[in-house]
Length: 301
Ligand SMILES: Cc1cc2nc3c(=O)[nH]c(=O)nc-3n(C[C@H](O)[C@H](O)[C@H](O)COP(=O)(O)OP(=O)(O)OC[C@H]3O[C@@H](n4cnc5c(N)ncnc54)[C@H](O)[C@@H]3O)c2cc1C
Image 1 (spheres, rainbow, N blue to C red):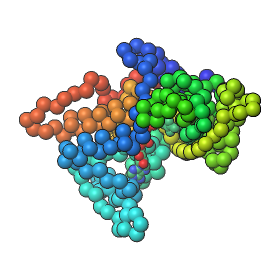
Image 2 (image 1 turned 120 degrees about the horizontal axis):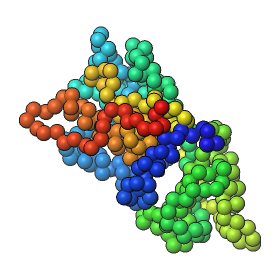
Image 3 (image 1 turned 135 degrees about the horizontal axis):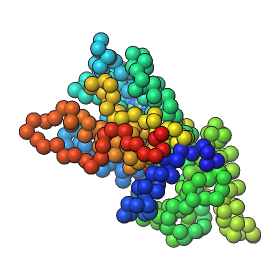
Image 4 (image 1 turned 180 degrees about the vertical axis):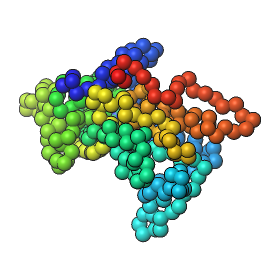
């Protein structure tokens, strides 16, 4: 119910999305995130001399005696040895639930890190359903009136790469997913189909009902932090009390909510905070027009 949702969601929507020039526009990636989102990022990083390592999970944050980071211990996979990674500055872009588990013991006593306990990822399920015919021609994100399905879109209309004039490919978010996350894919698809029958009665009733050709269920047991009332005060700044350790991620304090834009903005704020603390001599730092301090608004108090 409304009492379970932070007013920050509504205030952010009104303050930002309705007032900003293209705030009401919905944008879809024109294809798969791996190719259209991650690959260009990797290219940008590697062409600037950086390196992107996949399948290199952080195992432990190892500390110096003064509590600063000595090195990251990277878990060796498939029998490979663990690896020590040393750097001038360390950034975590992991989601808040993982960060909490990874915190070294001495940091757990610090108020800054203790506040992270106020944030917890919500379970979300995403479904991809391919049908033998067109269910809708709407080229937009749709908010569903089903209590089980929150938003969905027909990707055959919204994304050029999945364009199909004859067959729908729906992507749906099943939320709240708390009671569904441990169910089988078949149970989740059946429940979703039962809801779709109510949303599209013309296509699923009668002699020749629409057929589901293929389905894929993607479960995220800990997704973005649950935006219940009072969460803003637990969102950390990108700068931590540890001199050589920073946080990034959409859960950290930035002016957007837990979102892709929020994640990008948090990364910029982290980069800015590092650049301010470790300035390059002789180079003017470009500043993004926002603050790295926790933003306040009516919902913060
Ligand atoms: C189903 C679903 C639909 C969504 N739809 C939208 C949408 O339409 N628009 C929108 O703006 N936002 C959407 N979101 C929210 C958006 O995806 C998140 O806000 C965003 O991805 C957060 O980015 P992040 O970089 O902070 O964290 P994440 O994207 O969660 O990245 C954290 C990374 O840390 C990595 N990691 C975990 N453990 C380790 C470890 N030990 N070592 C190293 N790395 C580790 C993970 O693999 C992951 O890549 C959606 C989320 C879900 C689940």
